[in-house]
Amino acid sequence: MSIWSESTQSRAKEILAKYPEKRSAVMPLLYLAMAEDGWLTEEGMTEVAEWVGITPAQVQSVASFYTMFKRERTGKYLVSLCTSISCMLLGSDDVLAAIEDESGVPHGETDEEGLISVEHAECIGACGGAVACQVNYELIEGLTAEKGRELVRWLKKARPEAVNTDEMQELFGGQRSFEWALPSDVGAAGPFPAFEPYGTATKDPQ
Image (cartoon, rainbow, N blue to C red; front, side, top):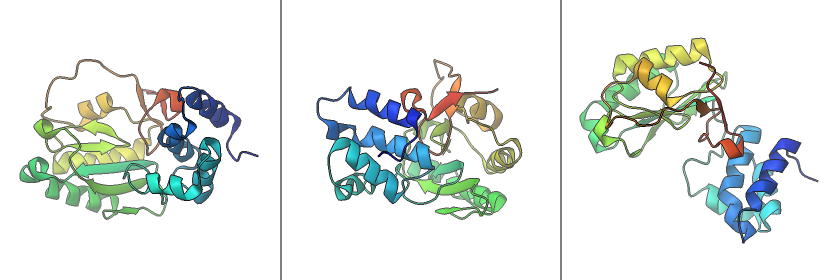
């Protein structure tokens, strides 16, 4: 018997129907498991294994390879700051220090409330908009140390149901790598990418 909610089981069936080989759906189903529990639990990975017909060890080998699959408790808001060369040269170390100080959360940790997790990330593909940051994988470009502090204060006070890249860029961003073409009215519902078919995205209440 599945440990997932009926809505998650329904999404899993829809996802599996798209793949000729069930095991090819491992990664999408891992995001479902994260949305169900907030991070990848042992039970969640075992559930994925049962859906795709492989062993839990094989599922864990995938989950442990990719950093976006979180196998430990993660806050409602995952703040990922790029510290690769372009961002580092433009002050990402100072921005990260400001975010850690304002949140009280060092890199790789989560606050006691389970609200905010902080991590430094390798290149997230926005070098022209350095310093680049993501909150639940929603992008902010041109972040400064002071704007990083404002971002943390906003997350703590507003506690948005969804974080939306357009809204956060307007509130906290600076120089963009290029002008974004298509506005988005959905945002990430948790510390995982916003995919509407997976139920990990929601309409931005703003």
